[in-house]
Length: 300
Image (cartoon, rainbow, N blue to C red; front, side):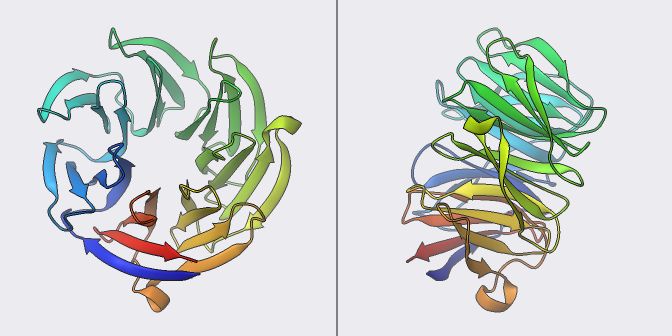
C-alpha cells in the first residue's frame, strides 16, 4: 500500500473538529473551534469558501440529503440549519445549553448527541423536538445508524455502547464496551459489524447478528481514538487518534496495513479528530487540532 500526501488546507484559525461530505464525490465541509464552516472542493484545492460563521465552536455537522440543508451543532447554543444552495441560515433552535457532539439524520428524524447525556430526537419537517432520551449521566459522544437492522448505537462517557430501536427509540441493549469514554461508533457498510473506539485507545468490533458479541479487541493506538471511516469500496477502514496518527486497516481481516504520521508522511502535528474517505480518487481526508485539513491518496 502506498500513501501520498496530496495537499493541506489551512483556512481555519483554531482546531478543526469535524469534516463531512457534501454528498458529491469531491466536496466537503469542515468546522472547528473558530466557529467557521468552510466548504472545500477537491478539484480546486485551497479555494475554501466560508459558508457560515457561528459564534461558538462546532463539533458536529450533518447534511440532510432531502433538501441539502446543513445542520450545524453550535456548542451550548443549539442547532443552526444552513440553506446550502443560497448560503443562508434558515432555522435556529436552542435545543440545549450543552455541547453537541454528533448529529445523524435518518429520514425525517435528526438524532443529536449532547454533552449532558441526552440524545435529542428532532422531527425535521416541523423542526421540533420529538423526544429526549436520557442515556447517560455523562456525555454522549457519538451515534451510528444501522439501516439494515433499524437500530442506532450510542457511545457515552460512562464507557458504554447503547443499542436503540429506531422506531420506538427504546433501549435494546447496553454493552459495557470500553475502559474509558467511547468516542466513536460506526457500523460496517454491510451493517454486520459495529466498530467502537475511545479514550482507552482500543478498537473493538462487535457482531451485530450475534447479539453484539465481541469479535475482536485491538489495542490500536497509543492514545484516544477519535474516529473511524470506511473506504468507498469497503475493503479498508481508517482510524485517527490523539497520538497524531492515522492508521489504515484491512476491513476483512482487521489487520493493520499502514500508519500515516508526521515522521513517515508529514502528517499532523497534534490530535487527528475526524476522517472522511471520499470516492474522489480514493482520497482520505483528515482534520486536526493543528488547524489543518490534510488530503491523502491511498493506492494498493
